[in-house]
Image (cartoon, rainbow, N blue to C red; front, side, top):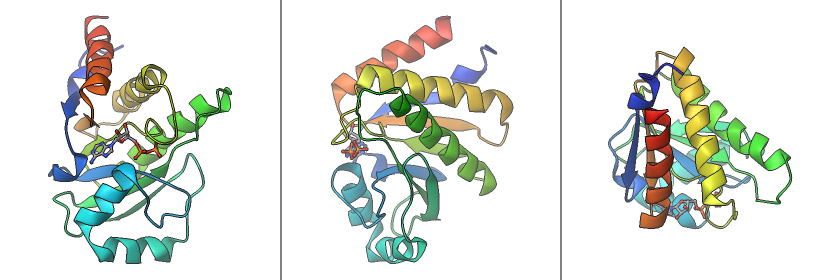
Length: 176
Ligand code: ADP
């Protein structure tokens, strides 16, 4: 791999709703009507206009993504993607990869050069963090290798243990 690519990836620990990036990604559910976890945090901070815009979209299938404005968030856009509920079947990995690919494609289409992701599907949806992390990092590298419109991809992990997993895998990518 072009070893400049992993340098466009950053990992952070904390709350994704505080980031002043072009777009933050929401681990939404198929209704796009808000929920718990990171989805709830994003809607609380963005304010009721976000839910109003989401209602006009009318839902999102698993693996796809939709974009809205960020309203009261410091981020300009919210990209809502629906991760798979972990089942242990091969389709999980494909759907999770599609979440990252489709979110980054929307970012490019809206000239969003900095994009921050939470650990999609790794909360209530139960995806094992090690496997999900490898899909997230590998897919981001793959897209960044051909997509110059994205300057920076950030991964924002809420827990220290998830952050350590991402740190380990990113280090391996950089040294490999
Ligand atoms: P899913 O339903 O896709 O599993 P969750 O919101 O339950 O989504 O969890 C996704 C990940 O987001 C989990 O790792 C959770 O710890 C994390 N998370 C929760 N709140 C925040 C936040 N404010 N910023 C970043 N990550 C968050």
